[in-house]
Length: 509
Image (cartoon, rainbow, N blue to C red):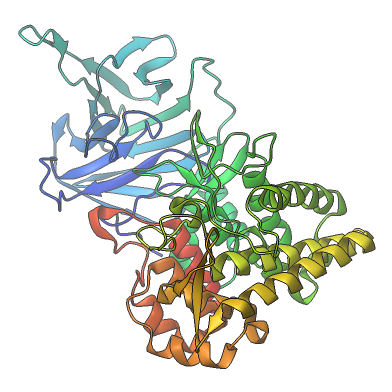
């Protein structure tokens, strides 16, 4: 599988290093060419106040010490820059990028933000970018650093590092580290790093539903270390924020129940002492506002058909305790006397731009009843496996209660949203009203809902994917509202969560 570096970066699971080709489709003034993104954790990059070049290194191949034209290609294991008479290969091993030039060198134009520097130390060339330290260590060849000063602006010019071969060979390692300068042992060379990456990718693919290699790669690429866990971030090249809702949707891609539970548990470990699972986390920032409780959606799916039997009992017990605490928060803070749950604020639904609170106040909605029914179903399965029969019976009763709530919202062949304060009812948005299909035939009006789904158009991407999971015959039509391929979204962005949904959908369709 070859990657189009104009649409999708070359990177690796849990690594922040990214290689991409900038064509400047948005006309923001970037020099077209090949870039290495190192400082994914600083400078807001593509977010905040718009596109910024700080934190990136522009790569230009050298032959005989002079800039030459080159082309780049990549697969999940390595990237290759080819130029006349030579090439540069690179592979990623966790926090290290290993490079080898054969009859070719590299010019590195380092784009720094305010207060960021490049200096030469005994370790190599040290790049200080935000809270991060990057070390470029030369193993074979020769290197040079050029940096000047803009006396009028009282700032340094963008530094240039050149790496050139000696006797036809150049080898270097780029290290992603911090103030501790921790540099664990890396692969011996590019070949070893590429083989390690290839094996890791294939092992990851074996845990997934679906067979699409490109979607599997985008999903693999999206994982990052986050607050002691492994979470899927929105977009590693721009938005390193991990959204709680997207973790649950991403877990749908796993056929391995243990892997799905790991992702859900890493999400739930972020909850406050009171049990609020934060809506998102980004570095040291955390938003302690409740996201939609989708966790059981993935767990019910992977536990079905005996999948739960393969989960380690200790892991299952920990996941059960975490999910129980998260669901208890909703029981204590977002439930009514009739057993229904409500969103207190629009953002708690997680659906951007969808008016799930038509009353300007708390609302009981069918999607929330579905999420709580599925949470109860997952907890019932876990309790039974752990031998907690009384608790399993309580969760089964909660699921039946939510089916009753859904039945009360089913009016005149469609679902309604109900005010949590006044009881007033209004029709809910189409996508929200189709989500009870995730319960299959247990959903009120299941046949009528499937007929409505056949006529649905232009649904939000995530809603379209979820509805298509239960109605695979509609997959093509519904997913057309989103992105059929991971690299086709505007601005060169990619969405690991969409690739996860497409993998889950591929198996059903």
